Length: 81
Image (cartoon, rainbow, N blue to C red; front, top):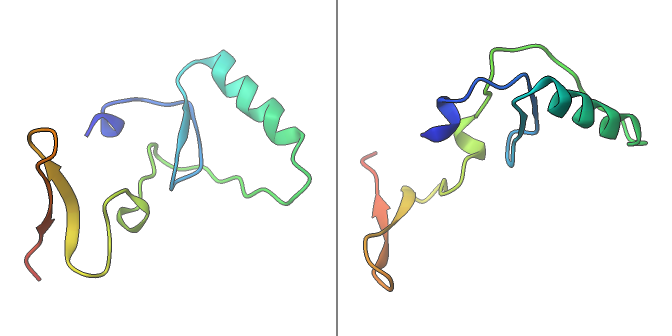
């Protein structure tokens, strides 16, 4: 997974994470956060934070991802329970 190979300075969000890879990117995200009126949670953690239950392709029916080897050949791939 490519997201595990990066070394971000800041991560905003977990379902659809936005990463700052440079100091300038970090400053831009912090400046944008200052404009938000609703409460914001800020924590320190080893990045990236990618909870399995918030990643694409997860569901409770045993299907973990969709496999598409050729255009038009997509199918659900069940997992062992």
